[in-house]
Image 1 (tube, rainbow, N blue to C red):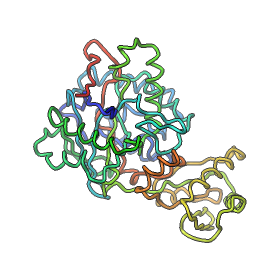
Image 2 (image 1 turned 90 degrees about the vertical axis):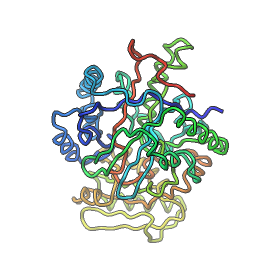
Image 3 (image 1 turned 120 degrees about the vertical axis):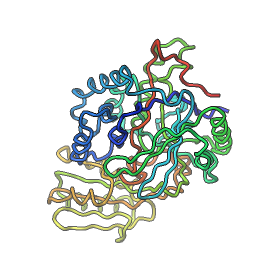
Image 4 (image 1 turned 135 degrees about the vertical axis):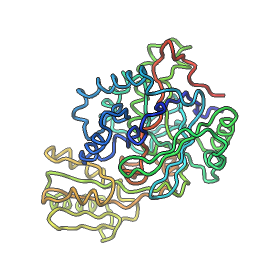
Length: 420
């Protein structure tokens, strides 16, 4: 049975690299708070860092200027040995400590041929939210010329009996430890162990058993959907230039991800809030109320959706179903008719309230999405509205740590991916 899971040759910084400066949070966090990334930049200084290998979305408008430097830094880290092979053929078990608790994960490669983000997809790997096509090209431009990838994709598996990752954690003392350090800027603590040899067999067996009862959906993209979509697009572009035999083993066919069990108690689904800038908040909310009325929705007050502006107004709505479907449809139409307005997606109520500090700003807070409904919702309805949920607060997201080559070279053969 094809389960799309593969071992990988995984790279890590060489001994002596300051890991607390190397590992940085996912690029799509703190997009409206560039001061976070300025602090990270000051902390890193001249030290080797994954910060030099990614493009934070807070700096996305500088992308064309920054991308060549990103590729140059990747090549330099490979050439000077900053990045070296830590696991020749296997996985990395990780243990992440956050305010929500201990979250285990497994860094592994997945076959991009088993992923399809198009609406109505029945692929083994599916997105949890709608893919915004215009957000894919900037990421694809980075990956297209990149010799390595660093993943911030968190891939969910629905494993209530804890059969895949948790058994490895229970016997982590028998595994080779790779790292153990404190993450920068409040990210918590991170430990990692190599999963090699016979230890990988148990993972494949457990994934096969999970796949047998997955009803066609084994993996759901929790975080990093657009980065994975970019990886898929780059692979399709490259695949068409390769002979059939090369397509089977080319490293770009695969993407490194962190597998996370949906059942993990430390995996908390947080709502993603909306901030509108350059708007008349009262007019927006009047229009939203009219849209609800026209759609036959109930209009009672409640805490399913709360909106507020910088002038002290507050609006509250009750909703029998999760309110985000109607809200996002309304916002998409409203923003298309008001190009002078701007929207941002914010993690955390405190961050939202710090931004909504002027009369022409509006903050909108939907209630959290129940993670227990996720896989069934995707099977029944397809993808959720984009930015429906966030897996934890911004600092609890995956930090860039591991890397993997995605271009072939004379000293890095195509056999870097092996499914035992």
